[in-house]
Length: 481
View (cartoon, rainbow, N blue to C red):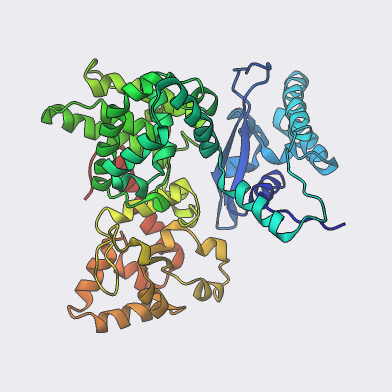
């Protein structure tokens, strides 16, 4: 019998690729150091990942393939949780090598890992099955409803009735008023998805789905002017930081904390300058680090709680926000980060860094803006076809450091030409000559000579060095350029 999967194929495929270690440029791990248990006495485990790359015949980082070093970090590879005979064989072999003959350590590890394997194998995957005789109209109707009613929207719909019943106010009207007062907010996030997490933070609650339905809705209505004030300042801040829009936003998790922090920011110019520096550090670290890749609601609540007293001026000391302890990405991690059109945090952060100096179009010289960003395309500086002739695979070509956002006309003109040929054409076409083309490339953190030289690995290395330096600067609160 053949069955049609209407929705969820990407998620199921991603889970399969993680458990079979099918990604050539990334390896996934489970952190087994967490000791907190939930209400069912089951521990929550974080899934982490590391970018992978080859250099001189060796796959880096080397520790990812060394069971002892992986275990020393408190990790196990996700592949050993694969719930079949192949996964079980890999699991036992890996555990023996990781514990190096220490029987007691093996028994302890075995208890943890086998428990996790059991949870994966017994995981309940809910689904909706339609009768085979269902008409096309019914199938399409069900798919449309399932595909558009995401978790935040469902929670919002549930809460709408409670807000009106408890306060007499229409949540839809409140959100519509926010949309009218801060029209540019919708460029980054649907207002309905922002207001409930922001209201939760204002009430000292974690912005989780479970907590949202228990909000004090009378207090939320009372706090509404604070939400509007925070949203106005949030949009202004994002514009100042050259974050263009939602499709290029590295992480949405940071928006609700920033909204409430800006709502509490002082009006005093001197204090406001210090707050702006602090929140720049916070936002760019949220973009650059792995802090919010797991348990995002809880992690963002912890950081918000630590930052709030410094924003309001209650304390003058450096806030001990956990996000400031997370390591910043290395040059190698930046160099191999994936294609920024995908929903990849670090890749989009790299693209956002390139906007800081204007990201001038290589052909027409226009600076990136919210008016022209929709007409630009994600362009391979070294074309995929050009690199394929040199034996470089597409996934190695589709990295953020080989990307620039340019207009479609420019992209079609470049086609699959070697960079040096395209640069020569652009130099001849530009009214101001080679100097102008160099300036336009420099606004993307691209060196003209590196691109013209035709050495792809060296180009990636040098651009990664520049991007990493700027990214670290922003993460430390210093504006660039």
